[in-house]
Amino acid sequence: MQFDPKRLAQARHVVVFSGAGVSAQSGIPTFRDALTGLWEHFDPARLATVQAFREDPALVWGWYEWRRQKVLQAQPNPAHLALAELARRVPRLTLITQNVDDLHERAGSPSVLHLHGSLHTPKCFACNRPFKGQLPLPDLPEQGASLEPPRCTGCNGKIRPGVVWFGEPLPQATLKAAFNAAEECDLLLSVGTSGLVQPAARIPQLALQHGACVVHINPQPQACTGAEEYSLKGKAGQLLPELLRQAFA
Ligand code: OAD
Image (tube, rainbow, N blue to C red; front, side):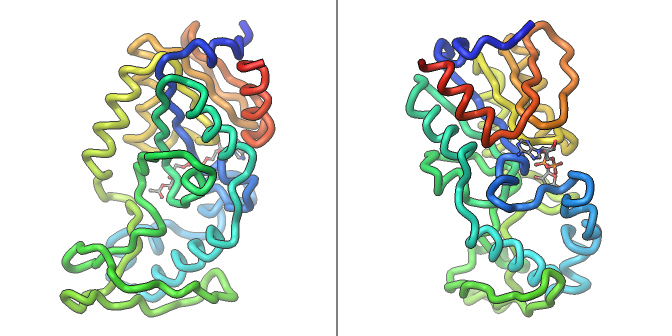
């Protein structure tokens, strides 16, 4: 059975669950794609854990500043723009992202739930207070370049990226809001995610269990278990604008 795009126009509450694939066509690398994924080239244990930051804060800070630099130089792509447009077309839309960039916001999506934090909200490693200073536009020629983190103006602790590292809990209020939305929605679009990282990966499952229709948008075909689960094979930057065009024609 094919997914009927008109169902998007009929939905009362749409949840969008986005992953790195949504930003891929903006030039931001994903994590697990063969050859181009970040975790193909970098060891998460050395860069994305509390232990890694304790051992080599400059290496970790430099890597995240390199990623922030790439995001600052990138622009939202047609997938981000279509999702912002969709929010204006349906009665209610909740956008849940695993992405740590701000491309959904820059495309015009309001109130994005960032499950894995953000590259743009650094905080103190010691006292957890948000960093008050101005972060300069990084100028990092190399992706492995070390950079000393700035210091907290409150306690002089080292500043760390505001992202969730492996082994850390997700922001609880954000996770609760995301689970609630998944349970309440009638249609969930899961876009550009491998669905391998918990607890975020439970979100489409929760929606299915609560009777919603779930549509996966991904160049890799996704396994569908229920009658109300569909896999649309292709790039988000092409498929989402087309889906909207057909839904609201
Ligand atoms: P992954 O890198 O695991 O998966 C990216 C998915 O996007 C894959 O399924 C690709 O097939 C798909 N994809 C690639 N290009 C696409 C395109 N143009 N349009 C649509 N889909 C495309 O990224 P995530 O699922 O986001 O965690 O990874 C989840 C989490 O793992 C991340 O948030 C990050 C990482 O470790 C943290 O940083 C805490």
